[in-house]
Amino acid sequence: MFSIVINTILFILIFVIITITMSNWERNNPKVYRYVIQSGKLNKAHSFVYISDLHEKEFGENNEKLIEMIDELNPEFIIIGGDLIRCRKVSDSAKYKDKDKIDVSLKLLNDLKSKYKVYFSYGNHELRLMDKAGFNDCNETSKYDKYIQDISLERVTRLKQALEGIKVLDDETVSFSDFDLTGFTLPLDYYRPLFMRTKEMLTEEDISLHISKPDKDKFNIILLHTPMYYKEMIDYGADLVLSGHYHGGTVRLPGLGALMTPQYQFFVKECAGEFKYKTGTLIDTRGLGTHSINIRINDRPEISFITIEP
Image (tube, rainbow, N blue to C red):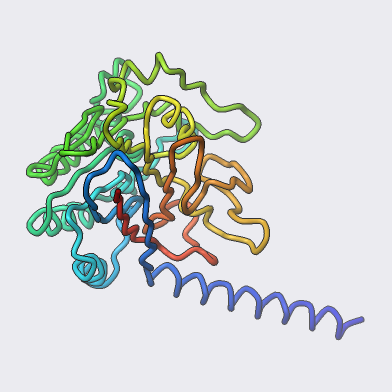
């Protein structure tokens, strides 16, 4: 009996060590995932890099490894789908500890915009930082004390400075000859945890308050940080929805797929990769970093290299 207990403990320890080692290797070794989307609406090919959910992660000093991998792809432009920074929620029941970080992200933005045309849309972490600073038409800034507001405002100011020279698609569209690129800024209410509750509804009327109806004669790319509402976006007129937020599911189990999303959903299929719905496509990146749960298992950080072509 004693030997069985010892062997069980040894097995668990070995399993934990292997898991931690594997996770550490994966978290520090991004991979290029390639996608090709074809459409009769396009008259020529366009290839671009899409990244999201860095959360202040560094791949090499000053992200030199990440930038080198992007350079090797020689993209026409770069799209960033939000959550570059790390911004924690404020709990009323616990003493506030400042764990927000933005410096790695600012350096990456400055490095990328010096080489490429960059398009950026906000994720929930950027929105949360602006909310803590009193932006976003927040009428309840008193919910954060002056210390939180002041440090958040200073960080928002520096973030906006780093975004100068980058096209920020905050409920905006930029038009190319044969496609349109739109950033849809989903309000923070849509990012609430979904354990024991249903998701917020997103109607066509809700969407129309943010962005206009896509031109059906052009190929339409819509940036939507969470893939939770990609079907609603395709029904609205998107040909391609680019999302992130789910971090690939954090742990990917053979035969079962993604384990858990940041909103406490389990075994959601659309956590990573390419998915078809009606006449549209979702590409959901695994993201680059982590935040609350600092592990990745069978879920390497992703640089998406996307080609859209006739």
